[in-house]
Amino acid sequence: MQAAVRGRQGGATLMVDGQTESGTATGHGKASRRAPRDGRGRENTPTMRAIVQSGYGAVPEDVFWLEQIARPAIGPGEVLVRVRAASVDAGTLHMMTGIPYLIRLTGPRGPRNPVPGMAVAGTVEAVGQNVTGLERGDEVFGTCGGSLAEYARARASRLARKPANLTFEQAAAVPVSANTALQAVRDHAHVQAGQHVLITGASGGVGTFAVQIAKALGAEVTAVCSTPKTDLARAIGADHVIDYTREDYLGGERRYDAIVDIAGSRRVSHLRRALTPSGTLVITGGAGGPLLDGIDRNLRASLLSPFVSQKLTAFVARLRQSDLLALRDMIESGTVMPAVDRAYPLSEAVAAVRYLTDGLARGKVVISL
Ligand SMILES: NC(=O)c1ccc[n+]([C@@H]2O[C@H](COP(=O)([O-])OP(=O)(O)OC[C@H]3O[C@@H](n4cnc5c(N)ncnc54)[C@H](OP(=O)(O)O)[C@@H]3O)[C@@H](O)[C@H]2O)c1
Image (cartoon, rainbow, N blue to C red; front, side, top):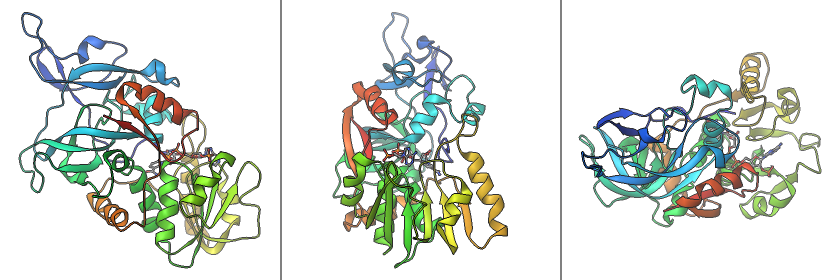
């Protein structure tokens, strides 16, 4: 499905021969990522431990490794975050594999930013020019370019103060996944109290937030997931749970006011049959062939929508501070809580990605620093 949320920030600042540049990973040319050294071979810029990716591949162990690289430099409007926790998600996997292949248009031989991860929680280490409202030591969460590192560069406009009732690990589970869920449920499905809503991929990163947000808006929620995760779907508040390995979730009598389709690859025509005549389908994620990985389904829905009574839509999530603030309110009032499955240290980030790749994750997988 969608590779990355729109507005992904550019590459980490790397140092090459003493010059800063926006990094492009080119094979295993590790020398280009090392911190620069003076004439005696001593490092002369602050460095950090970071997960670095070179090239694309399906096997996390082949693609990622831990390395000491230069800390990112910040510019006007940017913040240097001392990362306390980060999280991995389907976007991390898309960038790892380079699938859908459309991703490779922006980086044919590897991601433009060799440090993976977008979701971050940490403390402000330094602020750039023109940044107001944040200062050193503030606890923040949000999105950045390259969160699987000890320090990350973030636009101030993509950070907000961390919810007071969350640990850094919990807070790092929120950005990207919860933003996507909020936009799917609130902005695209326009879920209202009393509506019947079907959510696929309900046990995943986006889905666990989508279920809770739809419940917070007063909907009656049917969650779709696999057998080992049905207890999680109930625990986060789903009214009904369908195990898709045993039952066709589109085959029953029930018609839904909204379907938030986060996982699977069901045809648009089949999804439509489970909608009320004026219902809304929001394709948020899903699977498909390597070239488009389901994007063709999005296009089909959007092209068909003007000609049918139902609203059929797909979207690419936007990274907005206003959404972080709305989510923080929901979290602090106790209506939404991140479902964190596991936390791994940075040195075991590859195992975290492997856990996600193997489809074992229940909710969010976090990296703790
Ligand atoms: N539109 C956007 O801007 C946007 C933003 C973020 C993410 N996404 C997309 O949203 C999707 C979910 O992302 P995520 O981070 O939540 O991933 P995730 O944490 O890996 O969750 C995906 C879930 O899909 C379920 N699943 C796998 N195969 C399935 C199938 N055949 N039928 C039904 N459910 C299935 C899995 O649960 P079970 O084990 O229970 O099956 C898993 O929990 C991805 O496709 C991602 O690209 C889109």
